[in-house]
Amino acid sequence: MRVLITGITGFAGSHLAEYILAHHPGVRVCGIVRWRSRMDNICGITDKIELHEADLKDIVSLRKCLAEIKPDRIFHLAAQSFVPTSWKMPAETFAINAVGQINLFEALLGLKMNPRIQVAGSSEEYGQVFPDEVPMKETNPLRPLSPYAVSKVAQDLLAWQYFQSYGMKTVRTRGFNHTGPRRGDVFVTSNFAKQIAEIEKGKREPVIYVGNLEAKRDFTDVRDIVRGYWLCLEKGEPGDVYNIGTGKAYSMQEVLDMLLALSKTKVKVKVDPARLRPSDVPILLSDCRKFVSLTGWKPEIPLKQTFKDLLNYWRGKVGK
Image (cartoon, rainbow, N blue to C red):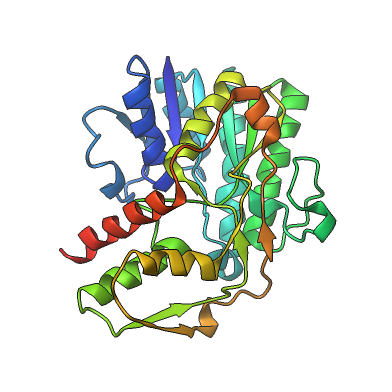
């Protein structure tokens, strides 16, 4: 079997590649990279995977890449995935996420290829959710509250449309927040962990800068999420959509407290206005019974272990 991972050098993509190599050794793992891609996340597995240069915004490069690989499955994870950046660069976010996916799909159609494709959506698609709509089911209305979220809705609906129009075997996932080692430092859990690690090393004053600590999110370990992605293409119905999450939400205050409990450092907490969004989603809480019923998936790594691994990751990084 030949598997292509877009975004293989990213957070989830690198963990997915490691998962496949460890648990499905007969699978040929390929990934798309750009000349400027950072390779840090996959430096330990580059001798076990195939990397092909292509860009989602360049359909010619995608055609050449797909023709070489002839993938049986595609995990489409590449995206501009940071919500605050989407406020500053909405057009670029759409160019990568929505138009990039169109390029991928059109390249496949032109080559008459029809692999199974997982399209990685986001819980941010649900956006403004009313109290009687929590936890979120796949049938919830989509009311996105950021350019990023709108772009993910576009990806989601494009995947459904290409299934309906062309029989493309797309399976959509709406992953709720996931974290763990290698998470980019612009994301909240990783940013907290990095600040704590820097304070422990004496590299910054003992002050943690935060945004909205009242927002609640459903956190899953990335290593559990990517296992869910694999199961999605094993058992998911083409054209269908599945939530993946734990079914438990934590406030950002609780997240910060859990991370600080793993350190002996005494800190002050200050709100940084630059970390506040023009509009924020108060709560994202999954109802993933549909996915669990279909696949038997359940999270296996406790959140405390996830945060411990994340903090140790940053301790190793800032100690260098």
